[in-house]
Image 1 (cartoon, rainbow, N blue to C red):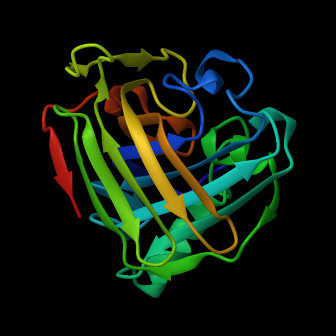
Image 2: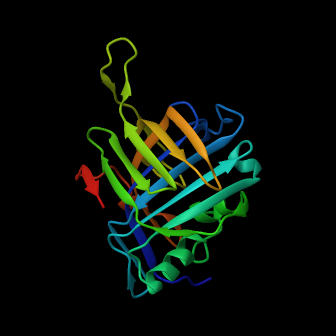
Length: 223
């Protein structure tokens, strides 16, 4: 199949209700019976055919009743309200998996979703710092996430850890952090001091673009 030429690249932050490290990354079952969380991707550079996507932010929240691969999930996406109609359509095509191989991130997760709530168009405030392992994002009245370093339980000093997945379909390397997040409405949740991650990743029609997906030389991003 021939796909539209597209790419989105930039920092991505996320958190879920599991313990630090996230069992999903190691093919294990969730820490708690359910899996719920949220993520945001700042598109530092991106395009869909002739439509530029630079500077936009997209995010999502989700919940599964058990391990992700067993399905039954619910999800809701949020598109940056600054996006034009043309940019929105491009992002819907990308995030919906219409222009990507079946065995890649948006299609893999999409196959586990039983119900998808209508997407929201809203302002998204995003910031992250890879060096300090801090960051977060806010969609007013919908959800918010704050990341901070994991702390040594004895000394309180920041603890650095990374996850490296040479063949990962979602990312290749991520800084691990501590996440606190909450949200209301269709997918309400509230979790503190759980798994968080900061990664820099590029996606295209055939999944993760390995050459573009590594921890970046620039440490801080804000949108």
